[in-house]
Image (cartoon, rainbow, N blue to C red; front, side, top):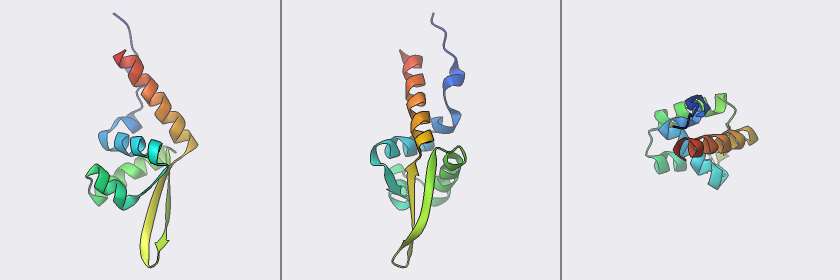
Length: 97
């Protein structure tokens, strides 16, 4: 039986909602808060909590601004986030291979 160090799985990314955010940003580059909320079926509060965790880890950057008079929040993956996401995918492959 092959031994796998489960600690290689990044707990910050591994949560379902955060994994969805990271997977979307890996492809989309930038996502607006409301689009992410709709895509993931999240509430505003739930999405905010998960975004803060990813931001605290340095995996995403959150840019706040306005579109006309409406607040606009955009989320993007940082270079550190891309590296962590690639490592996460690699660890999953090792786990299931």
